[in-house]
Length: 403
Image (tube, rainbow, N blue to C red; front, top):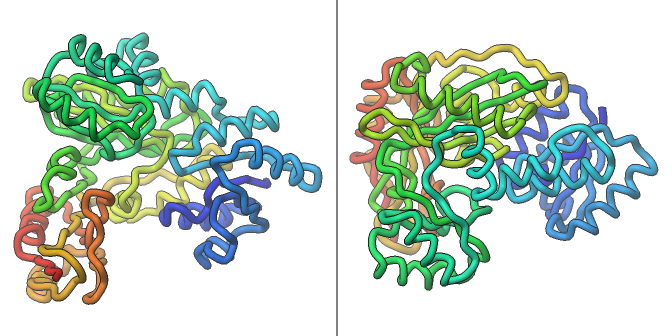
């Protein structure tokens, strides 16, 4: 099987998917923006061919693949990076290949179209409206009501996403989103935020994961002092998660998703109502696939590769609660010192899977631009209260400083 993989080396997590795809026996053909010399060595080692083409230029991508198709049979196209999900669908239709088409791919990329499809299927979504002009944003705000959220219809994560409680704040936000061509204005849902992540093959859900954000992503992006956490939960039989799991499965059915990774976000209100957030036809970012691997003692990279090439994969069971915790240094400039790490590892090290902090002397990252911040810790424990205790210690006692 010859599989074209878009952007096989970026973001960095995709490198592990590239290797996993090759390990199934597939011949992996990469196509991407990076010069071949800039690809991670692991990616170069697992590609049979690479086309360096600007992915933003659809015509150039199609021309390159038409030329390639004259010399080798292309069986399948895969994409794990959200901006190019529609491009992958365009290639499939252009080359008459199986898999998700352009209409279905658009449902996953355009948050307004996505919610309209789910509204029709009876899924509870936030009140919402799309807007492309200043006047339309104000009109949508009147329709939706305050508090509300303004975010790009084709965005990923919490970038350019703002909570708005008053008309005065909306006027301020208008200035900050001038570069965004089209936004979604939607009801702000008060509650806890979770994910529903899956790997699917041949129309069946082969793996499910629920993660819990602490605090909500919008809060993570709003306060520098926060140490954001994503917690993959062991007990999916918890009655409090049942509504989200059921909704996630109905969302996949409504959107016609059959093969690959999905990452959905949903809310649970204080009275137990579950509300859809959004969904991407991709894996979760910020190394959450690694977190799920530690939760299951499995390899979700391999699970995905088997699912998309064979339609099947061995089952994985959550044996632990596992979590990522991201650290932000105090101060600005370069990292000068780290405090508390040795003591925490001495006292809690049996529960720690990964410590990946920026080395002393490295410039701080922009915490507003990347959830990865200035480093991360991954920990796990079979009992959630114990894991939360460990995470609490790392959040408060591990400190990084910059100047």
